[in-house]
Image 1 (cartoon, rainbow, N blue to C red):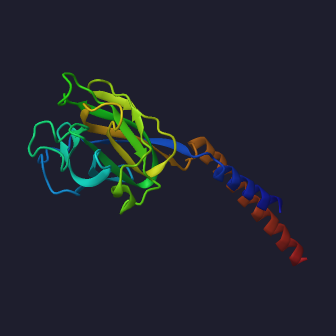
Image 2: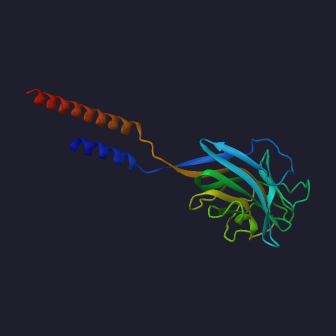
Image 3: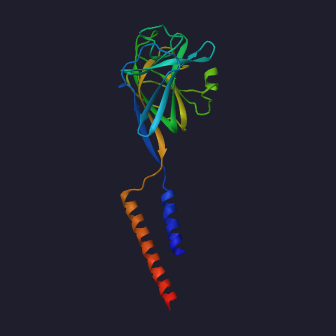
Length: 242
């Protein structure tokens, strides 16, 4: 029984090891150029390590809170969105922006739940401003039905984050985890934000992997238990022989 208890104790120590937080970065500005306009509802799939992600483009009409599918493009400076409210072929309007009464955003769908940590932006001067502005908004969309509910009206709870006023990394540090995140231009604060998403960083929880020293101790422990079992078996055979 003591040997069994030892094995159980060693296993419980291993299983009780805390999960580790692993950062995963997706970079979009090396994927080449897409067309400015294309079929609405297209998707890009990306893989980083063992984590996969699908990106789709969307556009919210602020006059009636309606959301429609849009075209997501992968450009030399990052991901951009073109929707029904954008001028066809306009130089400004394949960014993720909030001008002309429409707000562009992307939906990021992962095969495992992650926390959204930060976004790197490549910013543009948009119609109502003489300087670059890149305030953004994000939303944990895990509770929404991706086939219907999301697209009926604008989700009411978004978190806005002030941008850098230029190119660079914007930390988010979102609480909670989800398999679906929305990232777009600011919905409330102003109407001159425009950028492409150059990269995103997410964090996922992964099972802890024992360090080499821990593996060595476990192997020695199992070897000792094996030796004890052999000694006990020989004693039992000797007693039986008498």
